[in-house]
Length: 153
Image (cartoon, rainbow, N blue to C red; front, side):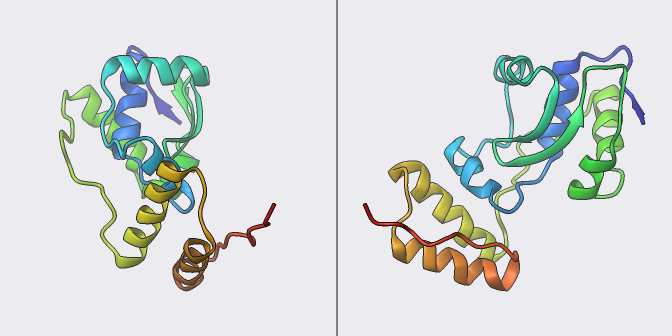
């Protein structure tokens, strides 16, 4: 459990969000959100309130935390974001440090392919058959996920 007593919960959320990773199908939501690596306080407060302090994924970023109490279980966050990632985020917040404009955009070719498909989905509201095939080809080699077939109306 990580103690967050005395910290502003919205700032705790912002710090965890800033250090969280976009994962799997989250590239679609991350792209649709405008690919934001940083939230200003007002945006974070709105998201915090709409989720009532309990987060699974936010804008495609894996969170897996419940911030409604004076401490939270870091297991899910650390499992998906790296060992001691939650504690590092909280320590940085307590010490007044931020990552600023760290580039957390996709680096691997397969990540860029999924990211591009997410952008296409955000712009068009759907994926066409060739995009689904491309996603499945890329994902089958890297993610162990796939999209079902597209049904024609």
